[in-house]
Image (cartoon, rainbow, N blue to C red):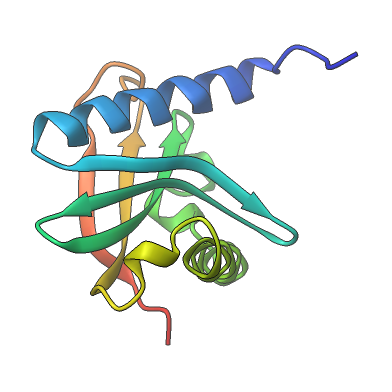
Length: 127
């Protein structure tokens, strides 16, 4: 039997849902969420004016170990890129050849669960 999510996992899921709604209100089309493969995961995959966006959502309420942007490590970037390539080779094959971008939606600080997100377009490169 599957265990219920931890409080941190539940907060993360709420942040992903808020990000999806926020991006949708800005005209982005949500194509997939929580795409997982062996060794990788990408939170949201969206389409913005023909460009494919692979989006990492991060929430940090306690900033003593750095902010949300700083928590996207090199290893985390590799896992996102791996999952993006895996998705493009399978379920997202219809989107191959489109321009791609890796973005981040960040929620930081004491009011992270209620504040508007910070959107970093082109947060990192696949190369």
